[in-house]
Image 1: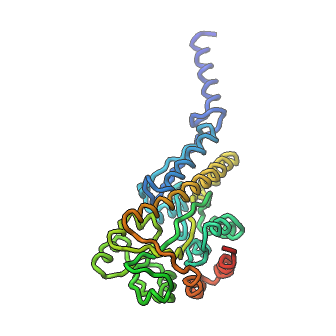
Image 2: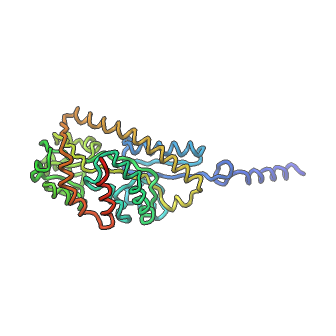
Image 3: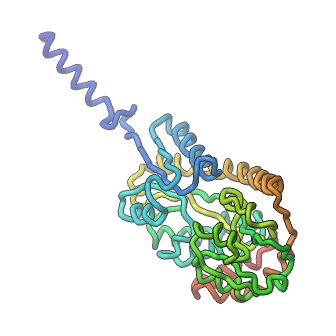
Length: 328
């Protein structure tokens, strides 16, 4: 055998032994892009990086999740549409999925859930399984893990402990009919408004208050135009790390298990960050001069719940009533 022929045979054998996408033992490398709206300091972003780290470690480097914060891959709805079409891989999303899966509206119903323990009981239990199954079948997006969201609280320039003390408070709310109906039932004057307009509107007195999680209250510097954080905690909710169902079906069973385990670890990691972060946010807002008021959450919930139940679609009402019946 000539030297040239031997060299060619060895090269051919090496080519057959080497995977087509550059990994060992014939297993293809997997690259997934995860885009989301949060910034680099947000716990969701840090937990997304943990997901990428765990997926890489569990797959011996074969599975790479590239994380893109700050909407750099596109806005949430654009990414969901791309995931359905197969042009996007992963995102962090929640009640926006109700556009396809009506049960996803249950992720953010005012006063449906009143504690972090209930979040886990719902999102991690049979109700969450039903919601997730509908999201997969109708939205063609598969939840892999859920992250907690800080409860929404009411800010104002006077302390508000009971619904009666709202007394027509001009309150900015997101442009969500359910939120408008609930705050009307509570006695406020809800005003739908884009988030970017809220600070100026509070500053010039167009509105008297707004409602958001502590993270947004701090990042938007509402402490400069609001004195009180009234702990209504009127929305406890969660959000999903999700993958395109098309992309999921392209993965091998082994790779799916890697992603499932990495997601479980990222979820546990996010929870530890979440609890610490809520404490940090409260301390920082107090340092900046805001006073925290322990509002009568039971009174708010009792007055709001009829409007909350009436505001969801018929097919979601049975699960919503189950959620509201859970122990606190």
